[in-house]
Structure formats: C-alpha cells, structure tokens
Image (cartoon, rainbow, N blue to C red; front, side):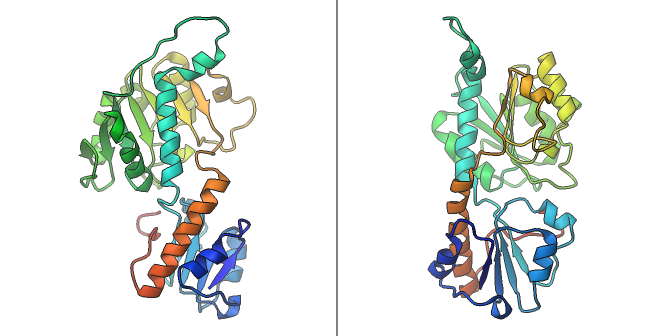
Length: 297
C-alpha cells in the first residue's frame, strides 16, 4: 500500500493499524490519495493498483475529469465527516432559533425574538452518513424529522421518510431545511426561487452539501425579501465566496467558509476510515464509501 500527500502524518499509521503494509509505489496494490490533482493521480496510477482511497467525501471533480474508471475500486470519504458536521448543524439550529446573529449585533439591552427547537420540524434532503448523524444528534431534542432520499427508502430514526417527489412537501412543512445531498446532475440547482417560496417565512435553510445545490441569486433575494428567515451556509456558489458579495452583508445569513469539518477534525476522521477500509480490504469485506460511476458520487 502506498500513501500519497499525507500532510497529517496519520495515514501511514492507519494503514498499519488496519493490518496493511506499506510498499514503494511500483509494488503497491492500494493507493491512499490524500492530496494532488487529476494529472498527478493519472501519472501515479499503474496497472497493479486495485483500489484507490480518497480523502474528500465529494467526488464530482474527479468524476468530471474522467479519472474514475471501472477497472479498480474507488472509495471516497463519504460519511467520514458525519460527526463533526452533525455538531455544526445542531449549532446552527440553536443559533437560528435564538436569533444569534441579531443578538450578537445588538448594542442595546433588549429581549430578542426566539423559539424552541423542541417541537419543531427538520427536513433533511439527503439522508446519507451526514443526514443519519444529524438525525441521531437531534433525537434528544424532540425534533420531528422528514428525511428525503433518492430511493425513498425508510430512514432509521426519521419521523417520516420521503422520496424525491416529496421535496415540495418537505420544504413547506419544515422549520429548518438541511441540504446534505451529494452534488450530481440531479441536485444542481435543486433549491431555487420556486423552492424557497415554498418554505415558511420563519424557516431557515442550512447547507452543508455543495453550494451548487442552491441558486445563490434566488437565495439572496429570498433573504432580503423575508421569503425565508435566514440561511446558515458552510458552502456557497461561487466558492470561495468573493469579498463584497451580497451574502456577506445580509444580517440573516451565517457564513462559515467551508469549515463545518475543520482540517484537524477531518484528519482524524479520514485516518479512521483508512484503518477500517484497509481491514475490510484484507478480509474481503465490502469497503465503505464506494464511488459509483452510475450514481455520480
């Protein structure tokens, strides 16, 4: 096994902890790809590589560049960062419920508006690893949950499970709408002006997926007009969000510069995923985070 671009220093020990052994690239049958571009990856691959483990959860860039093929196994960090991102989502729920941006900006003593998270409804669009972790995180807080997946399968822990045709109902029924779906051809522009207009005026949009799932111009208009109460965005389109962009100026937008999962948190999570997948590979078990060309993630 060969590890490329491990700035954290945690991945080689993780390979050994999973029962694997390190080897020079030309002798390796597994590549753990921690950093580097498509051209570098193509130059590094050789016919003996059977499996490539990526660090990130989102594979859209690699799929668009035609790097991923059917000749070998490819695994992403899908679900790896679920725990830190679920904590972030919980933080944003309480910040929105307590009008925290408004409270932090005030310079006079007064009681701001606030609402309880308990008894409210959270709609989760994309109930994969992150969505399931969020469901577990909100369970102690008496939150009703609507979980939407592409398949419409029953999602453990959700109050109600929905398929893609349930998006409009989820938007209209939720006090908080969480986007945690992968970026695919079907999810680009998933939330635009029409969808924002379906949300309740007191509702908040929380995006921890990809900025491209939301029409940014429509979101700015909805926040300015009071179509929705606010948005908590860890991801934006474009990204990085340029200085001076209208979203920076809106008092009802919380922007966190793609840091719901920090580098340090992510390094630990990725090391654990590498350890577990190396163990699975050695024992012939199905790997976690398999990338599907057909599904686009």
